[in-house]
Amino acid sequence: MNSAFQGLNRDRFDAKLKVTGRAKYTGDNDVANMAFGYLIQSSISRGQIRSFDLGAAEESRGVIGIFTPFNSLKLYRPLGREEGGISGEVIPLLQDTQVHYFGQTIGLVVADSFEQARDAAALVKVIYEPKAAVVTLESGMAKAYQPQNVDHEPATWSILESGASSIDDILRQAEVSIAQEYTSPIEHHNPMEPHATVAIWQEDRLTIYDATQGVGGQQRDLAAVLGIDSDHLRVICPFVGGAFGCKGSMWMHSPLTAAAARVLNRPVKTILTREQMYTATGHRPTVLQRIELGASRDGVLRAVKHEAFSSTAVTKEFIEPAAHRTSRYLYKSPNILVSQSLVPLDIAPGTAMRAPGEATGMYALESAMDELAVKLEIDPIQLRIKNHAEIYPGKNVPFSSKHLLECYQKGAERFGWVKRNPKPGMNQG
Image (spheres, helix red, strand yellow):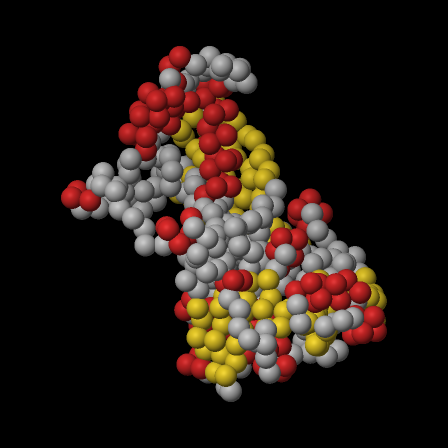
């Protein structure tokens, strides 16, 4: 940053709009003759839909149309990453009767008002043929597998010093070592504005207001799923309304809304409820991490072994790279092994959430470092300083910039670190 601007007050152009309530978010867009969509979601984790009972819903006041796999809207598969796509799902909605996870969108009710669409959706009855589902990390571990790569590196990556037979041997020979498991649950995004879509067709051209972090990718994927030329599609998102990763992908409610608007020949707005977002717009996967650290008695790391097992949907692979984005480079050690495995579950697809991989990985790695410090009877900050990496492990190049040592020093000063009771679990008052 230019020093001329440091310390000066600068107004954000959107600040006054936001604090005065004049910022127009996706769901705030209204046009004449607007209809409203409401998702129908599955109530089983796995199985097949046998039939829908739509009688009461179709007779409900204000209902314009109800779309299901038996009265579907034609949608195609989204683009792959290599094609510039950013879709959070790979299976287009309503094209078959299979249920892959609880909360999967299996229908859309469109009515004259949001309330009418919501109330009609509640009247829909679905008859399923359920199948056994695997929904917990523990029950799915037997089918754990390694992805083709993680951040363009092997799923299992390691460096070993000359003469070392394996990292396990190094750990066994270490003067001091710890071995621990850490688990973190699925975490969900809750941005200020839920996901929302407003679709407006003018002949063969679509204008869509969408809550998205990536307008270009959203445009490409929407065009592919709707089967139209991307030049005929305009995506508008002046204010994201909070995201933290869940709006970085295209989710299928968006093209579903657009497809309904095309068939009904009128604008349609779909705003997801908070409850619907828990299965329709991604989450941070649950992760089991096994960490082993070996060190000399003076606290110098000799070996770091970090294995991560994260949940992924059966329908779409998503990696929470907890080990690769932390133990791969954070501390210097002549022996490092990181590995990533995926546990396929019958759950909704995962997606990026603020600091994907780093947040979960740092929790485990730093907890392990603290436990090692206790065992060594070394100050946890001093242990980190002693093992601070100036050179990228395995690449043998210096970091272009790194200020962790300064952070340790400044943080310790401001928190009164030296005055603390060093015994773990004590109330510091």
